[in-house]
Structures are given as structure tokens and as C-alpha cells.
Length: 178
Image (cartoon, rainbow, N blue to C red):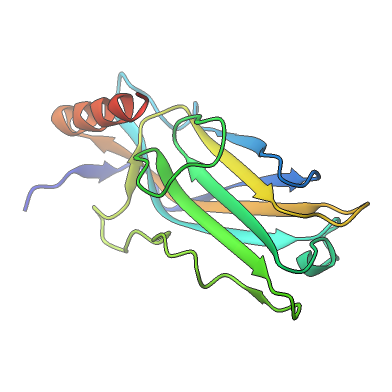
């Protein structure tokens, strides 16, 4: 078995919060990876899984108080800045989440099928060699005077890649930029 990456750290969590205050408008946040990714040392970030937490205006508010009925919240994490939400086949897409509020007021997330868990093995994960992760969110209808807060939690490790593996990932990332 060929080993793609050598772990430099145990798993740790990066998090960022995105506050959506305007309906049908993309909102952005970034996670700086400059301290974790090093091209010279072929050091990359290995993402194991991504979780999303939806809250209302404050930490005590439930998200359903901020959104109207028949409403949708979409959030995506990418390793390239696309300037908005992307299709599921975009190679820059790392993870996505969607939350819906039905006309009956029920909240569900069952239609978002993108795999946000990359497995538990040493070589399982999404390798990122870019210096930022980009979080984009949009809500179709926010109630007046409220906001939707979405926190993304990225469980990851720092790894050293072989020269060929690092180059392949960097080329793929560059190709995805076009």
C-alpha cells in the first residue's frame, strides 16, 4: 500500500461563523490556512469532516425564529473563491449544507446529500493546499430584525505529502480555478 500523506499533527478543529442578514444575498467568510499550509515543505491540510451549526440572531435563538416559512438556507465551503454558491460538481467544493423550513414550520436538511465526512483512515480526507477556505451562505427570506448565524466546524490534520502527490493536488486546484 502506498502512503499518500504523513501526519504532522493529531486532528484539530477550525471554526468560523457566517452571519447572514439580507435575504437572497450571498454572504462570505474565510478561514485563513496560511499557518497550516506550506508549499516549500509540501505541507497540506487534510480535512476529515465538516459540520454546520445553524442559529438565529443570538446564540440563544433558534434558527427557525429568523427565517420565514417555505425558506431555504444554503451554505458551502470551498477551497477557491468562486464569489457565490457553486454547483455540486465544482472541484473547489469541499462541503455543503442546506436547511429548509416548510410551510408547516418543520425544519429539515435531508435533501443536502454531499458527503461531508471523508472517512476515518489515515489517508482518508480532502487535501487542501490553498491558503484559504471560503464560506458562502444565502437565505431565501430572513425575517425583519433577525439574522441567521451559521458556524462551520472543520475537523482536520496537518500532513506532509510526497512531492508527486502535492504537485497533483496543486495542479488539480489550479485547474479547478478555470
